[in-house]
Length: 404
Image (cartoon, rainbow, N blue to C red; front, side, top):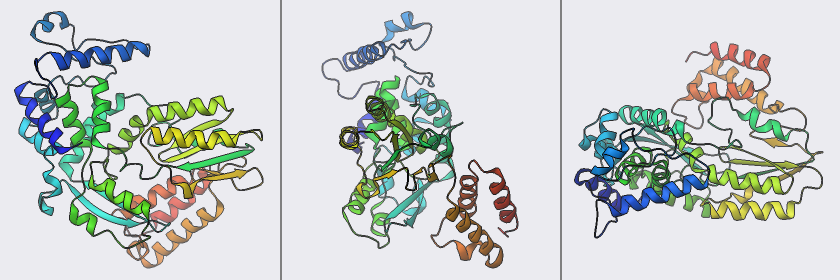
């Protein structure tokens, strides 16, 4: 979100005016947005409900929000602040509508930053919210984000879904195609999040404040401190995205926001796949397609690229792969030539890591500087035990021997 927009949103929250209004600021723009949202909802066969059972009486006081999903119904900026146990001023501050966090000194910033080099020579920035902001993000997750619709093709960061459920539909297929989205979290900007929340029914001021809580802009000095690595256009695009508003990798709310924002992308890719006789699933930024020997790759690949571009994302072309049945086929890190399974060499590498952690201590094995190495290793154990509980038990026994 452009920060001048955020300032208008913050000021309008207290004045009762709606940004973008002209001759009738209190009625015209909100009424138009409500009618537009109502038309969209009815076109999708959804039921549109008023803000409360007293809508007729309250309509005499002004237009009411049109709610689409079972989100918390915070009809004003002050309602939102009260529900989050904040004053309006505190909500302004945490939402960072004026962009001061990007210029603040480190003790006053909302996030802690840590650069991690990637295996491909790139860099990844972990942006961890400080405790109070993290708690606010968890509240928004529970009361708002968990109610937003997700496509059945999305398997990452969802209850009841996993890498195994993402990979299973592709097992035993003649062709498996993998494509990666470049800069997944940094590509989701505050305006995109705000638009989603407006569609849910929130007034502009509330949508802008919530989008501000869920996104951030990386300070200039943090970007300048990015470690040396492969200097290419991909790195430049990543740093540019971080300089603008984006989802922070490290916030508890970011995975849910990313899944909700990509709902339309998933729907279009699923339709394309069905039309071509293919199967589609997504795990975070990992897109997977599979099909029979007759799969028309000459139509699938350009079709995916077009949809991804139109939905505001970009593919990492170097990560696109096509694997036939006689080659190793992988989806979400699992081999799917038969039943989904963790590659043996990955399992052996994790066993070696745990052995060295027992022998020399975990600090000496944290080569990439993970801020929470214990949690990182636990996550790898959980993944390595996918569809193989005995492996997970052996790895967990080794983990328990480490002096954390």
